[in-house]
Length: 164
Image (cartoon, rainbow, N blue to C red; front, side, top):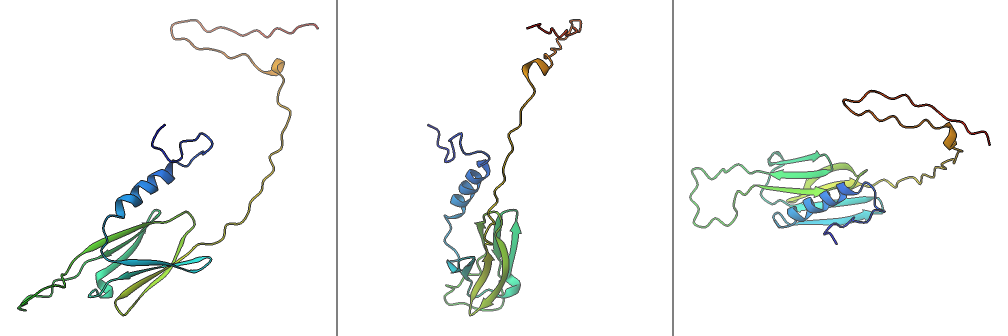
């Protein structure tokens, strides 16, 4: 058995989900900055990142395909200052969250060193479509296949009709 999650032939077109899962597992290793993900309502999620020491202009939020990417880069303003201990580093980060199809970013705001990002997950409408089954052409109505072999003369296909 392969290591694929969606290895069954019954799962058609789910290859991109496996790629998203691989990408998410690679991004999960870095714990900085710490963050929360909360469900605010049945259709709303909120991501909160602890970004103490960052100003709004130090933070950039982008949506790249199906990823929400948050980048932070502080300007090192320690020039001319003498630190006896520097425990608050001017550290840069990049945090990426893989989003499902249809998730929309509602907005972002900062409050007391916390960056909040609102995500909306609209409820999908139930779609039912009936597929009509029609009578296909009979075997007699189908044309015999013509095979083109390089170097050979093209053959003409003659349809034989039985008198049954």
